[in-house]
Length: 280
Image (cartoon, rainbow, N blue to C red; front, side):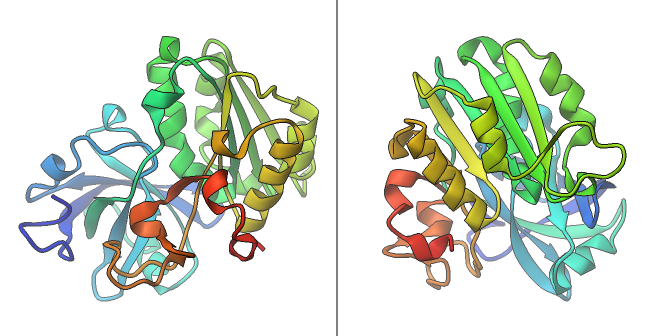
């Protein structure tokens, strides 16, 4: 079931139980689902997404930013960019939104067990990666080393900063931060995430990478990972697109012969590397 009743285009109602600033022009929305929504979202997986609607304005797709184990709410990190996201940013606790989903495929977390994970997030692209981090931390013995590379243009655009201490304190876990433009308080790396990747130099042995961020970042990170010996099959990405239906019907999110909404949004780079125009 992906929406209320048999109508896959009709959203569940949800109540905003918390809305707070996450970064500059980015807020996190915590939603309590109503009218059967909890059942529909009971076992969603890291990497899946949903459409969130501001009534009277429309809906937009967002990666689900937490795992069911961290529930009972759904978290969405939303950047104010257009009319729908601006309308959502003007809402507060107690207001009602629509949620349609869960949709898309997911990260193969079962296949990742026993392997080292390198997670690379750029800006708001860190939102769909947060469930991966949560899954690993909540089942720490199932996975190998966790290396997190987290980037943004400016410190004010870094997301989930309140959780960095938890991440760094976890066993066999390291967090590396970088920004393009530091402020006077910044005492971490300065530069592009590709420069940080080169500096951290993770090893490809028994490892997989998971990347989300701007398309150009994904492209150059993937190129560098290949140069470092990571095979495209072990480099996973989650992609964004201008989706409309989320059901593979409208074709707006086509990626060659694939549709991001149903074949993705999670791919390994062996599936999409030849589609250079997707990233540049």
